[in-house]
Length: 302
Image 1 (tube, rainbow, N blue to C red):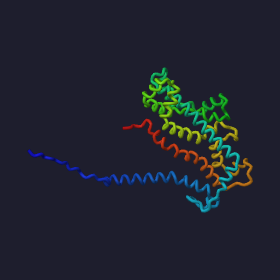
Image 2 (cartoon, rainbow, N blue to C red):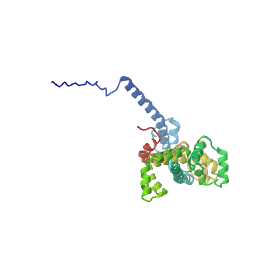
Image 3 (cartoon, rainbow, N blue to C red):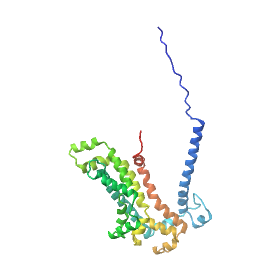
Image 4 (cartoon, rainbow, N blue to C red):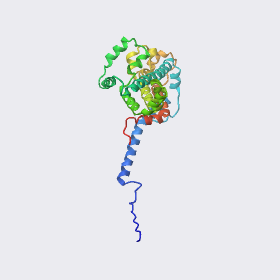
């Protein structure tokens, strides 16, 4: 009896894909490159303009590299007490505010992730309610005023200390953590605070990095809060000062700085925009590894 062997012939695989697929991919690349250029080119123009002279800015409607590099605008800015004070103030408020907001959000999200917590459903419903309804600008201002926070940096941090949307995402992340790790820690004698700081937080680096960036960007770019709550010009944040420089005559806006010379007005505006933008762009690459993981929280995974 002879053994009969059969073989199946496989159809050749087209590694390059069909013509329609290649056309679709090409169009996608073209569209994405176009969107990237729309986003990046204005930033490059502002950066180039901050190093250009007034005559070049007036004569050339658009350029990506100045004919002659001029640093007068940056020298003027960093020699001015008002701008340096606003920059330092914004850095400190952003750092302190990010720590406070992360601390409050995480410490509220962790107990809400425990289904056995008494009153958990009521608190979650109240949090969800704030996603739909809010007091508005005037009631919030009255609360800040009655708490004595006007002209205080805490007015820039506490009213927005917990973002309810972020809170719900972080709570969902905590619910997905393996319960066996927490139970093992409790068997070893750890209390709830020990479990939170020694087990939960080390496993939460992706969301810590992600929401640190979200909170920091929100505080750094916050314009309305200092406009409403800060009346003392010596306590202005960077965004208020940038607004003064970009929406009014720069020479008049900086007259209080007691300088004997004023750099090109347009170059000065470009320079303050660059300085107000670069810090956040500088920190993003260091958080990118964790940020890429954190933004996938709550997504569908196979």
